[in-house]
Amino acid sequence: AQSVTQPDIHITVSEGASLELRCNYSYGATPYLFWYVQSPGQGLQLLLKYFSGDTLVQGIKGFEAEFKRSQSSFNLRKPSVHWSDAAEYFCAVWSSASKIIFGSGTRLSIRP
Amino acid sequence: DTAVSQTPKYLVTQMGNDKSIKCEQNLGHDTMYWYKQDSKKFLKIMFSYNNKELIINETVPNRFSPKSPDKAHLNLHINSLELGDSAVYFCASSQDVAGGSTDTQYFGPGTRLTVL
Image 1 (cartoon, each protein chain N blue to C red):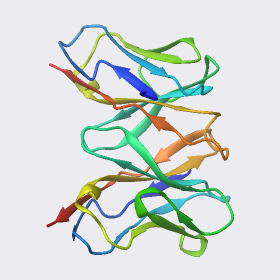
Image 2 (cartoon, chains in turn red, blue):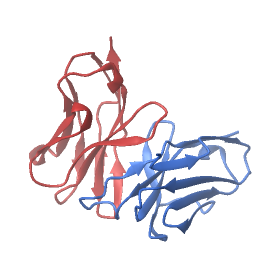
Image 3 (cartoon, rainbow over the protein chains, first blue to last red):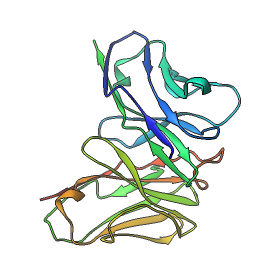
Image 4 (spheres, one colour):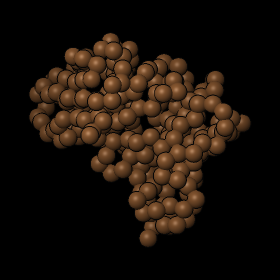
């Protein structure tokens, strides 16, 4: 069965530092992968998605993610975080049952 | 203009009551979804409708019944509310069934349901 694992429950980084959030997926074929962000009290917003082609995907708000088939990973990165990036981040994979499966989320805190 | 809207934003009710959450999207999308997010932030799909037809129905108690009067609306009715129903419920929509190149899902702001 398809699944998504986000091994880090909570990460704290200093403002201006680089960020990498980990995501591993389990899927037999080429996966459709997503990263969503949920700000406090808000719904989810799509940051970026990977369907095919270039394995380095650019998203909104300066985020990017790299699809690595050999590692079954789709890690999210940002070179320099801002205080407004504090939020919950969800990795997701589209499953063959016509639905998106979400990971358990990683909470990002920003240290001033 | 709000793309996906939900009402109410907060809902506090007693066990055993029946309640509804409404969802509307003005994006012209064909597919709408209901998700439940538990206290640990775990997000799981409950239902999906495409052009008013049910296409995804996860293992959800019969007390939960989605209703889609038209393509732009997907309401969630919950009978005989239980303590375990307390969660945040998100509505979402996408142009087509999730998976195609156009299938970004747009989420509403959520409805926080508290059952006392």
